Image 1 (spheres, one colour):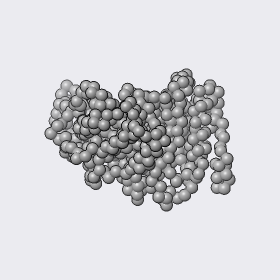
Image 2: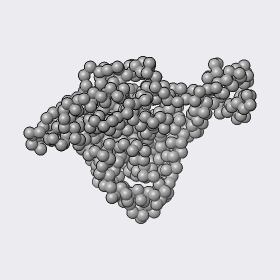
Image 3: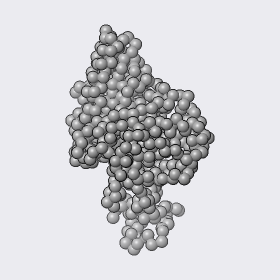
Length: 513
């Protein structure tokens, strides 16, 4: 074994190594330090001391000479690439988002120039991917993926029809990661002051926060504001994370978190077992539809006020309400939810200004507790969520791999994504009118998303088409929004949940008996 392998092996066995007064010290659980490993440490003692003493602090830094050299995809990107394979359950499509914004991009030439400069600034807008699981930034692209339509002389009905036609054309557009530029911008100029911008983006190249970055950069360049050049890029960040995995402090945390999840692995339940209308593997559905509910600013403030009163974060409460809804329609009352984690570590001033995929995942195990009040269930939800997030050096994808190794259910197609409280101060949805948005993700049936907008907070479910019986999602979402509405009252928090299934669900359950 080389020195890095020895340190890795020690961390895996929870053996702590450190240097004091020039000597190597260790602390080991009983029986962990076997003879073979002990001999390796003794034989390489001087090298280990040298490495631990003089190892440079890992910092993210720009490497301009390697800017266009291939680099590895992240675990999330790898799962997105894998999900494009129609041979996998719930697969056959990429992970992408489509959104329409009310904007003031009314000068065609200025807009084209702004997009050109945006693409030059943000390397991941020029990314390509290989079958071998690598990605690379192209020095340039031959043609900008822009369409511009002038509708100044059109009626309102004609304008809406044109935008709807384009929406239907590109909202579920599938990109080829090996050949395509992975985004599109379509601009409809309505008059001298108003336009509608349609964005289609494959999330291989950017996460939810990247949409904020893209729109903010575009607005600054378009309006001739000074925009400071980036000092690092996404490739630099990935290089940093690769080096980080060799750091003894990271390794200790990684194996500590791995042990946390391995201790839970045999007790983790499966996915929610919600009634589906067909065997999904037989359906050709590759599209999603959306149910949405907006809490205006006043309602959201009341919701936040009640959360503060009971010492619960709004994200934890929304997660509980989502799980309580799923529970009413699920055969199993204990189940797993996939949690999307917005993970941009505070390692450089520019980390919030880069387009790229910084997301991770964790899992949340919901346990039935009908005997408890909503307040008690919220407290339990928050504790489990925070505990799991604290041990996220071993990610949700890695936990799912462990489940697969044990021949347990490893596809969890019910997802919760919240950007409320993400700390991103440049949220474009809070500055610009969002007219429409929808996302699609491979191996996902329902993605519950919570995000702040200019109108308050948008809560939406993006649902895979053709999976659930007609009317079922309508009933589920109606119950979900009723829970949100009731959560501004103390009586809701202090009592148990009252179940009220819709007529369609009662018919299905009666037929299923």
